[in-house]
Image (tube, rainbow, N blue to C red; front, side, top):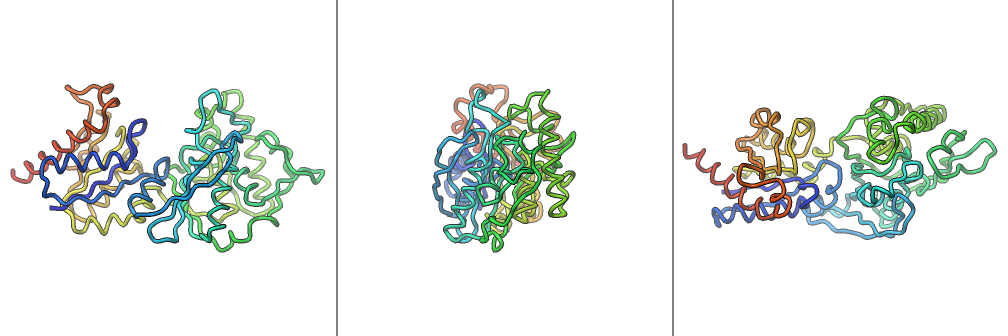
Length: 379
């Protein structure tokens, strides 16, 4: 019997790779003869890099970059096992996880470090990119990234725009003559699970700004700054970002990737499933086990476990779900996709216990899932 193990991370506790290894131990506890293949996954946010590198036997590269508030840090990008596809997770350089709450600074938080990662990959000769843009600390419309790649933002007097989102209101022209010429040879696939426009009630600032430190009284101002930027882009390049689906992702970084790097959007989980060749592995398996930290109604809208379940359905095999916690309102809907639905938290295991010893309880519950699956087959 062959089982594929493809969980997402259990955020706040274990990475997708660590979850997968714990699940593997649980299966082997039940039956050491089972063949298991570990293919950790993600949906484009934090953890996408690690999942793709682990699943494809890829390679990491480290780069000195600037973090969202301009500090020197070391970030990583990766190259898949195919030796040509470069994976950049913007959160590595420009992520909110890099900041303490009191360090969030949406006026000046920058994606410059993400641009440095892209440039470093170009220097190594890579031209095929997967860009995961979840988990950003920024609301800068991707200006920082573009500056790192050679774009100039110019005021009426011909001088360069100062740093900070508010300065965008002084923008009169965008000079792309210095944009790294190697980018014309590059292909950018944007891994993203949101479809928010650049501005407006569902835009970058209104929807995601507050978690990055944007106060209620700043939302309209920041949105106006991004609107002015979008107006200039439309005037110069005939590309309308204002209501472009996905352009508001990562504080507008999605829009910058579309307009200046010719990026194309794809659901993060679809990109990952394709990259790790999950469908090929499922063809010879009898069961796939997936999971995430918490499953709820959002899981049914493009999250990693649902992507795995749909891939399993195409392969005509069963899928099992093990998550840290499951919203009771979502369980009936989840059971339409998964033959077994289990959670770490139950009558015997509290949330606190599950958070303190996630690996142990994942192992125990995976053993139970396998036994339930076998019992169900026998019945």
